Length: 66
Image (cartoon, rainbow, N blue to C red):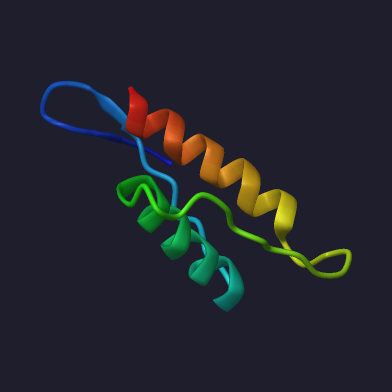
């Protein structure tokens, strides 16, 4: 969805995550701010949302860097 702000248009994405994805995102956010955390192991069977989470997290980090 694209919404207009006062100065420009902004892309607003309403992603929904399941419980394990939310936990992984919370840990990844902590890793960004804590030098002691360097890895996250997130596995599971086919269809568990690993690739979707990875792509969304990469997109989120790109937006954060910009």
